[in-house]
Length: 301
Ligand SMILES: Nc1ncnc2c1ncn2[C@@H]1O[C@H](COP(=O)(O)OP(=O)(O)OP(=O)(O)O)[C@@H](O)[C@H]1O
Ligand SMILES: [Mg+2]
Image 1 (cartoon, helix red, strand yellow):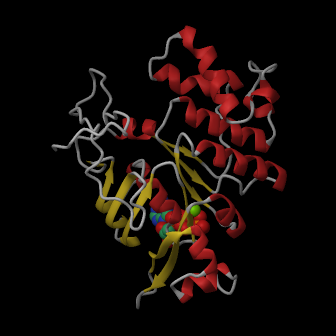
Image 2 (spheres, rainbow, N blue to C red):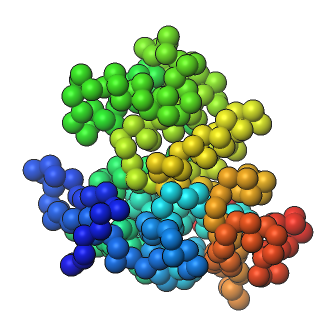
Image 3 (cartoon, rainbow, N blue to C red):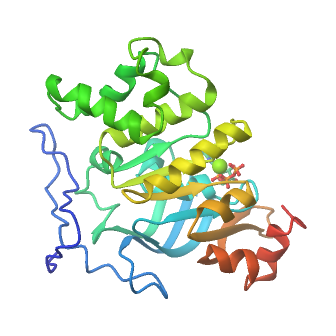
């Protein structure tokens, strides 16, 4: 793959360099080859998806999704339960690889590299594209070790860890609340604190993208507000894709919104599809498709 170098894009190499790795090193420092998102000529495209289908064995869960994800923006995925939001989100860091029978067809291009080609190391992809889940899932370890875990695996020196832990917890707006109890169990934190810990853990390895699957659904409104503020902060450094069932949340925090829906075939199989993808302000004030309007006004879904 030949590309022009682009000074605006940090150098990214999509494979682990361990001796054990069978994978070829792929340098994607020239990311300019990826087409820009429609109408957003001033933004850098991180993911370019074209004709993505996802199957679980014979079941087509998601059909023909094409969209671009822009850098340093928050992109929200909304739509009724079962329309494939989580399925699609998992495509961006090859988490679907871990599900028996799951298969992704079509093209997902990350900074100019085809994510699903054999040469790409999924472990390295997951370091660059982190994930925060619906339910906070700290490791059964201390607060400190939750954050230090990823950097240690990536080869960070002991002397660097204190700094990494402090920086990540500060960035996740949790440092002041936990600085005096770093060696205590992460399970002693409240749900909202645990979720901020999971965000801190995700950013401790300095990812490029953070995927969030309904990160506030288990939280009260105050904790939710803190996570929303955090997301707005984090997008200066990271590209964020978030699944949410909360329309107000999507409207408040996202720049772009993708609305997915489900279509049943004659056999009763329910396949998800992308209905509309546009700047969030447009989706919520003047959607193109009547299905989007019905959903955001609460008439269906
Ligand atoms: N591991 C799996 N194995 C088989 N089918 C699955 C699997 N995960 C999801 N599906 C199916 O794929 C379709 C899309 O599911 P998905 O979880 O992506 O929906 P969703 O939009 O995230 O829904 P929700 O809003 O309820 O979280 C559903 O029909 C679901 O049953
Ligand atoms: Mg889901």
